[in-house]
Each structure stands twice: as structure tokens, then as C-alpha cells.
Image (spheres, rainbow, N blue to C red):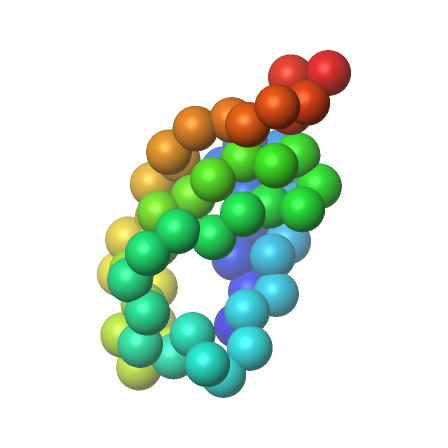
Length: 57
């Protein structure tokens, strides 16, 4: 499964372990934290949580 970072637009690849997941993921390009909710490989919600150190550079 792939989602786009809401901060920088980078594609984040999630493996099958995230098929039913609710929690945070980190974008390794800009270090933003996203809160996501997935059910049966379907995206139910994505929310920008915060930008961590270095993301604004």
C-alpha cells in the first residue's frame, strides 16, 4: 500500500503488516508524522500530526 505524505508529497510504502493499522507513520523524506487509519488495505483516514526537526529546511 502506498500513501502520499501530506507535508511533502513523497510516496510512503507500507507493507502487508499495515493492512489493519491505526497509528502514526513517519515520512523519511521530510520527517513529518502522519496519523493513519487503515482497514482491509483501505485508507479510512490520514491526518498531518506534526513536522519534526529538519522538515522545514
